[in-house]
Length: 156
Image (tube, rainbow, N blue to C red; front, side, top):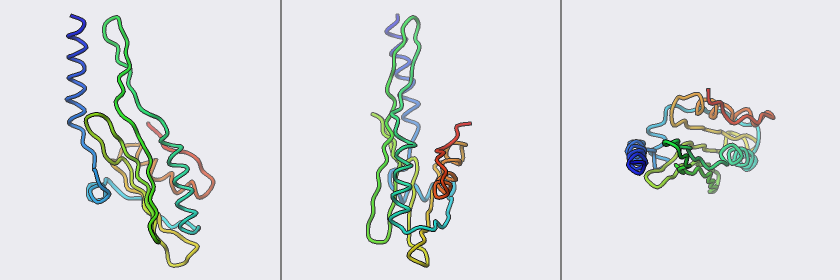
Protein backbone atom coordinates (compact mmCIF):
# COMPACT_ATOMS: atom_id res chain seq x y z
CA UNK A 1 0.00 0.00 0.00
CA UNK A 2 2.86 2.36 0.85
CA UNK A 3 4.40 1.91 -2.61
CA UNK A 4 1.10 2.91 -4.24
CA UNK A 5 1.06 6.15 -2.28
CA UNK A 6 4.60 6.96 -3.35
CA UNK A 7 3.87 6.10 -6.99
CA UNK A 8 0.68 8.19 -6.93
CA UNK A 9 2.61 11.12 -5.47
CA UNK A 10 5.35 10.78 -8.09
CA UNK A 11 2.78 10.64 -10.89
CA UNK A 12 1.04 13.74 -9.54
CA UNK A 13 4.33 15.64 -9.35
CA UNK A 14 5.21 14.49 -12.87
CA UNK A 15 1.84 15.63 -14.21
CA UNK A 16 2.15 19.04 -12.55
CA UNK A 17 5.75 19.48 -13.74
CA UNK A 18 4.75 18.56 -17.28
CA UNK A 19 2.24 21.42 -17.27
CA UNK A 20 4.91 24.00 -16.43
CA UNK A 21 6.65 25.24 -19.53
CA UNK A 22 9.46 27.73 -19.76
CA UNK A 23 10.67 29.73 -22.75
CA UNK A 24 13.55 27.87 -24.41
CA UNK A 25 15.23 30.68 -26.36
CA UNK A 26 15.99 34.34 -25.66
CA UNK A 27 13.59 35.28 -28.47
CA UNK A 28 10.76 33.30 -26.88
CA UNK A 29 11.57 34.77 -23.49
CA UNK A 30 11.35 38.33 -24.83
CA UNK A 31 8.08 37.57 -26.62
CA UNK A 32 6.38 36.13 -23.54
CA UNK A 33 8.12 38.26 -20.92
CA UNK A 34 5.94 39.65 -18.14
CA UNK A 35 7.84 42.91 -18.19
CA UNK A 36 11.16 44.63 -18.65
CA UNK A 37 13.31 46.68 -16.33
CA UNK A 38 15.70 48.82 -18.38
CA UNK A 39 18.29 51.29 -17.11
CA UNK A 40 21.62 52.86 -18.03
CA UNK A 41 24.63 51.87 -15.94
CA UNK A 42 27.45 54.40 -15.68
CA UNK A 43 30.16 51.84 -16.44
CA UNK A 44 31.58 50.28 -19.59
CA UNK A 45 29.87 47.21 -21.04
CA UNK A 46 32.54 44.73 -19.90
CA UNK A 47 32.46 46.03 -16.33
CA UNK A 48 28.64 45.95 -16.27
CA UNK A 49 28.61 42.41 -17.63
CA UNK A 50 31.18 41.15 -15.09
CA UNK A 51 29.39 42.75 -12.13
CA UNK A 52 25.96 41.37 -13.07
CA UNK A 53 27.36 37.93 -13.99
CA UNK A 54 29.08 37.55 -10.61
CA UNK A 55 26.06 38.73 -8.62
CA UNK A 56 23.56 36.68 -10.67
CA UNK A 57 25.64 33.53 -10.16
CA UNK A 58 25.71 34.23 -6.41
CA UNK A 59 21.94 34.72 -6.30
CA UNK A 60 21.14 31.49 -8.16
CA UNK A 61 23.81 29.13 -6.86
CA UNK A 62 21.44 26.62 -5.20
CA UNK A 63 20.16 23.37 -6.63
CA UNK A 64 16.50 23.02 -5.75
CA UNK A 65 15.02 19.91 -4.14
CA UNK A 66 11.79 19.20 -2.37
CA UNK A 67 11.05 17.19 0.75
CA UNK A 68 8.04 14.89 0.53
CA UNK A 69 6.46 13.39 3.60
CA UNK A 70 4.65 10.18 2.84
CA UNK A 71 3.19 8.18 5.69
CA UNK A 72 6.01 7.26 8.03
CA UNK A 73 8.84 7.94 5.61
CA UNK A 74 10.38 11.14 4.30
CA UNK A 75 12.34 11.38 1.09
CA UNK A 76 13.92 14.12 -0.96
CA UNK A 77 13.01 14.26 -4.61
CA UNK A 78 15.22 16.48 -6.73
CA UNK A 79 13.00 18.68 -8.84
CA UNK A 80 15.42 20.76 -10.80
CA UNK A 81 18.63 22.67 -11.19
CA UNK A 82 19.30 26.33 -11.91
CA UNK A 83 22.36 27.43 -13.88
CA UNK A 84 23.65 30.84 -14.94
CA UNK A 85 25.24 31.21 -18.37
CA UNK A 86 26.80 34.30 -19.89
CA UNK A 87 27.84 35.23 -23.40
CA UNK A 88 29.76 38.20 -24.77
CA UNK A 89 29.91 38.82 -28.51
CA UNK A 90 31.37 42.03 -29.93
CA UNK A 91 29.60 45.01 -28.32
CA UNK A 92 26.77 43.02 -26.74
CA UNK A 93 26.42 40.54 -23.91
CA UNK A 94 23.73 38.50 -22.20
CA UNK A 95 23.21 36.44 -19.07
CA UNK A 96 20.65 33.64 -18.93
CA UNK A 97 19.30 31.98 -15.81
CA UNK A 98 18.17 28.51 -16.84
CA UNK A 99 16.08 25.88 -15.11
CA UNK A 100 16.26 22.18 -15.92
CA UNK A 101 14.80 18.99 -14.54
CA UNK A 102 14.14 15.54 -16.00
CA UNK A 103 10.84 16.65 -17.57
CA UNK A 104 11.15 20.28 -18.60
CA UNK A 105 13.39 23.30 -18.54
CA UNK A 106 14.06 26.67 -20.03
CA UNK A 107 14.85 30.27 -19.18
CA UNK A 108 13.88 31.94 -15.91
CA UNK A 109 15.60 35.28 -16.45
CA UNK A 110 17.33 37.08 -19.30
CA UNK A 111 19.63 40.07 -18.87
CA UNK A 112 21.04 41.87 -21.91
CA UNK A 113 23.76 44.51 -22.22
CA UNK A 114 24.25 46.91 -25.11
CA UNK A 115 26.39 50.01 -25.57
CA UNK A 116 24.91 53.40 -24.70
CA UNK A 117 25.77 56.71 -26.36
CA UNK A 118 29.25 56.81 -24.74
CA UNK A 119 31.79 54.08 -24.06
CA UNK A 120 31.54 54.52 -20.29
CA UNK A 121 27.79 53.73 -20.16
CA UNK A 122 25.83 50.54 -20.77
CA UNK A 123 22.13 49.89 -21.35
CA UNK A 124 21.01 46.98 -19.18
CA UNK A 125 17.71 45.24 -19.94
CA UNK A 126 16.28 42.71 -17.47
CA UNK A 127 13.36 40.58 -18.69
CA UNK A 128 10.98 39.00 -16.12
CA UNK A 129 9.38 35.58 -16.51
CA UNK A 130 6.36 36.64 -14.43
CA UNK A 131 5.16 39.35 -12.06
CA UNK A 132 5.66 37.50 -8.79
CA UNK A 133 7.47 39.28 -5.98
CA UNK A 134 10.55 37.13 -6.58
CA UNK A 135 11.05 38.04 -10.24
CA UNK A 136 9.91 41.65 -9.86
CA UNK A 137 12.43 42.29 -7.09
CA UNK A 138 15.09 40.27 -8.92
CA UNK A 139 14.70 42.54 -11.96
CA UNK A 140 14.79 45.78 -9.95
CA UNK A 141 17.70 44.67 -7.76
CA UNK A 142 20.05 44.33 -10.75
CA UNK A 143 20.13 48.12 -10.94
CA UNK A 144 20.97 48.43 -7.23
CA UNK A 145 24.12 46.32 -7.73
CA UNK A 146 25.67 49.27 -9.56
CA UNK A 147 25.20 51.40 -6.42
CA UNK A 148 26.68 48.95 -3.91
CA UNK A 149 23.57 46.83 -3.30
CA UNK A 150 23.78 43.07 -2.99
CA UNK A 151 20.16 41.92 -2.51
CA UNK A 152 19.02 39.16 -4.84
CA UNK A 153 15.25 38.99 -4.55
CA UNK A 154 12.41 38.72 -2.09
CA UNK A 155 10.03 35.78 -1.97
CA UNK A 156 7.09 37.47 -0.20
